[in-house]
Length: 311
Image (cartoon, rainbow, N blue to C red; front, side, top):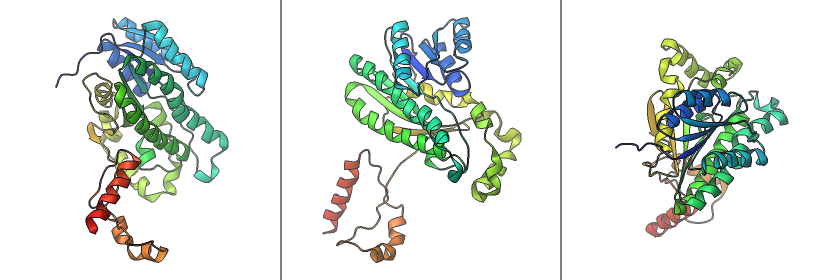
């Protein structure tokens, strides 16, 4: 399948001053998109790269952690290019500490950029896309949020929250031409390189996995460069993509859908007690017969259908 170019499309990419966002911005601009590069630092340099390569871009340094900043980012894109077709919500930061030691500021700083930032830019971008009947939204979550990472509670909570946000946007946007998906990127970036591995002494399971990774040539090699994530993002942002409500992993050149499902479990014939739960714990934990609900109603209907079939 040929992915159409982005000529005439307008893309907002947050956190695009370096790392993953920079790679996305350069790739979409190379394919013809008009790109608004948002970052509190480095945005001008990336726009200079885009223009030097013959592309079209504008820089924006608004703080997306505020509603006014998010609105300003979208307004800048509309002022510069006449609309918004694509939002790649990529901006992020990290405050690492033990869960019990995390300060209120540690929590607010991270959730403010990742999760509130996704709201602050996403809402005005969604409104603009809805008016024109077309849009592609790509939100950045993390394996840390869905699978876990020691000493990153605020980061993981924000990233898991983004998955919930994107699920709702996908449901609300589908009828008006707006598709919304989530990526879980694994890449060597300045933020990833800032991780303090002091937690390794306290968390044997992930520490052992990290030690195995460190033993690989060059700690995983070029496959952890941001450019290995970019093809997935470019596809999800393209007109050729018809998928929505998805979560996708990009890890060392392996691209895969991440499923959020519910096992068949155990259905009680009557109101259960805690002792009944204990007696049927193995069946409750069995992942067999897993379904993938796309809304809360899908799960309720599935349970009702199983109840009807059991009668």
